[in-house]
Length: 473
Image (cartoon, rainbow, N blue to C red; front, side, top):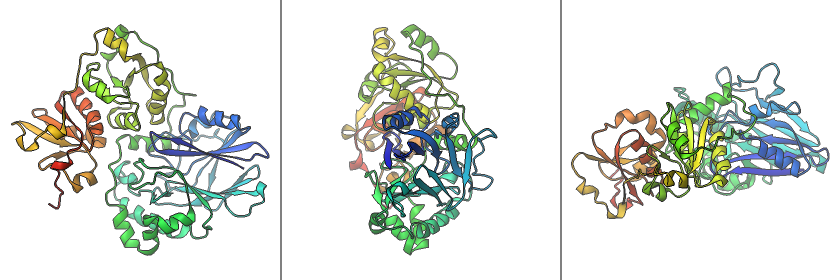
């Protein structure tokens, strides 16, 4: 048996390639949209992909299942659960798809895969146990848990309401999740590997561990959320719904396109390279949006193309910025450090549903053409005195609600940056806004977007913790 985790650091997302080395057949579970990576990995290991399975309808990335559906050698395995609202709608009569029910199995060579209905995060959610029959096993070696159980945490049950806008399902989903957690792992031995769909940094939970995998036994002993679900149903419901981070705006669109469909592109679209003059002309066109993806955000603060949004290719910053501030009909102009950066930039955007690229240019060419004269006013928080704020000025805290409740600058407005675009009407354009987060990273992304919208902004870099007071205080 072959098993490999394919991890996306920007989205903290894990897919899995599982292969039968006796027959050469392979399964991919929860692939992202740029599927060439999985084909390459399979080929490099003497495998051919014949099956693709999903744990659920994802909210944080575009599933690669729709791209794989074009391959006549691949069969899709999707959940049959979810009811009218959360069943897959995009497969048509020509799609090679099998809809799985609870405890239903399929084989891939000598590997047996069994669906385990594990609702709560979403109604249709499946986990998958894996038995290596070719190796003589009659018990699972692993369970792929998707967004059901993570290392150190469990999936959040609020996204259908907080991200997809389905009213009144948050608490019932939490109760369903508690029942699933109390029952669905109970029959598995402690030695079974637990392979989660996300790691630390994902917005699909609030306390995910940074270890890439675990075991069922370890999580039984040390996963506080799982333990609470097993012993205190009411306590679990209260705890799991408290302090969840505000989901990015793009999550609602991901839920829709993964359920209803998105255009199949047969790969990441390749944007044209533009001259400085061409770039400037296209930037003035309707629906054009400039994303400055240089890794050094301090360089952006000093000099950038007027109207550019700061979206550094550094950790999750590009996905965070695009997910919060880009509209689905925007035509993207990309500023990069160099051509070596372009593939990763376009892949990260493609994975969260943005595939309309008007062109790209290295920053140095814009600077050489005198087209990088804009800057972002910034002040170090350590040198800033919130109590001496000038008249007609406001502090804007763009962190998550739980962070704000733990401590914030008294009098600060609070709008999480992930929800800012839909709440701009709460920010009049008269005042000067001093924007802060915990370090300056999220505040920089936000400040660039507000500047594009015509706001007078000053970025507060660094931590303002010395000025914070808690809500209780």
